[in-house]
Image 1 (cartoon, rainbow, N blue to C red):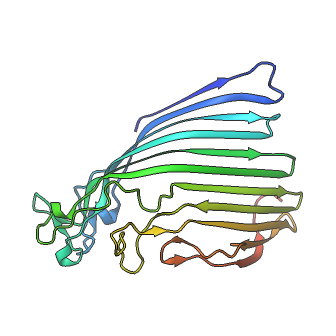
Image 2: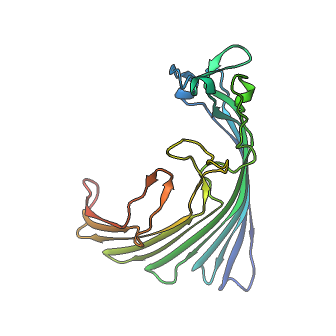
Image 3: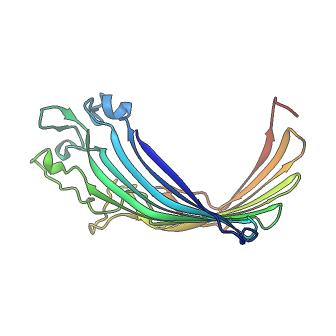
Length: 280
């Protein structure tokens, strides 16, 4: 599939000791994703495949910059992006048969069709700071807006129990509008220490009990926002043996990345990593 990339470099004479060149980057491309074997050929009566499915199509565009500062010890990057998705494969089910195959206009039965259209757009900011030979600090923030602009309505495929698709105009599943990460690493001759943090904003999800994407008041089901901090380290005992330890969920947060699958609270793990073969 076609893809175009461009890079433009701005240099500032007399300021190189504090400010490096500015790089402007642009990318545009198209891509496809073939149907899975399940979607195309499944014989199941509740996941009946559709051999006539077309590949999913996507168009992507992004433009951004990269800037080095303070004798190249700080790197700042920013990017704006837009993605358009067409012919997205979606599951459709006949309500009168508890989700069985629907009959298409040509008489075929299936649970999968090309129908969904969606878009996403937003920006991402990242920074990396190397204040010393051993210390590295990184951070990122992402804002993304997503919308489902077209989707299959069950009403299009049967009139026994017509149910219009209520998701059109809403954000895509499990796509938080706000997210970010933070890492701080100290790298020694034999010992490494890493502090890793991150957060996810609220996002649409599926009720793990009813499997519905809407609650009893017809509101979208939302997974709560959360933040998480981990601490880990490595100690190289020899060239082939490394001792590692990790504390996950350092702040003992109660969260679910996906509804119905609660994460572990504060927990600890440790072990040995052995390398076999290769140069010493």
